[in-house]
Amino acid sequence: MTYTFLKGHGTENDFVLLPDLDGSVHGALSADEMADRVRALCDRRAGIGGDGILRVVRTSAYTGEDRPVSDAEWFMDYRNADGTLAEMCGNGTRVFAEYLRAAGLAGDEVTFATRAGDKTLRAADGLWTADLGSPKLLGTTQVTVDHHFWPACNVDMGNPHAAAEVDSIDPHGPIGDLYDSPVYDEAVYPHGVNVEFFERVGERHVSMRVFERGAGETRSCGTGACAVMVAAAEADGLAIARDADVTYRVDVPGGTLHVTWTTDDRILLTGPAVLVGEGTTSL
Ligand SMILES: N[C@@H](CCC[C@H](N)C(=O)O)C(=O)O
Image 1 (cartoon, rainbow, N blue to C red):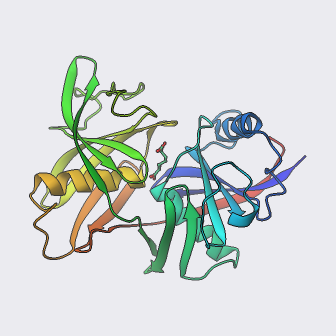
Image 2 (cartoon, helix red, strand yellow; image 1 turned 180 degrees about the vertical axis):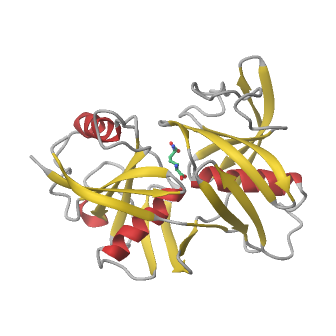
């Protein structure tokens, strides 16, 4: 059986998109079969290659047990490259919105369902801004690489994050190459965690690297950038004492994102979304 795919990315966090509007293409697969298909598609040598999958399906046509309760027409069915489900993907929301717009299924503003609730995105000046809702600051935890350890801010952006401020994110420094997951507290994160390391570049300007749950080190992570911004803003005393919207620039290996924390406690993620091509596959 062949089916259509597209390839896209947001600051080089790259995805295979699977249009499956009425659920008839992938909906009949068992959970294990779908996980196998995701791994095959995301394989960078034998497949298309990607950090994850964005399946585009009508909310009413999604047959998974975790079907969201939502009036939104479209559901962003996100899966990590290793086949696991994830609640949220910030860069993915922009690429998903870009696909809907390019396919004539939405305009410059769209709301769709995700496993972390409905998300609204708006396009302006060639970028998309995603309203990712309120962050949850859950205290301090610890992450370790080799014999180095750092305190990290536990931030829930719909998916779990540990954001650690460090002196340097240089791969030749203590963080190293991030081939393996940093060690984290499994009691705090029983379902795994995305680990971000960030360093200060200037005022309200940071640079980060990330080890993503289910994907390894990636070139960007949108929710990770939001978690980093929240951690930096908290350290800067802006988590509570915020009398105006606050924006941080977050540099990632694949580009630049901007994250705004509004006075009404919402996180807005702004960045690019690119569709690079499409084709058919039988993977
Ligand atoms: N890259 C994404 C996050 C994707 C999901 C993550 N790996 C998880 O398992 O929570 C982003 O841009 O937010």
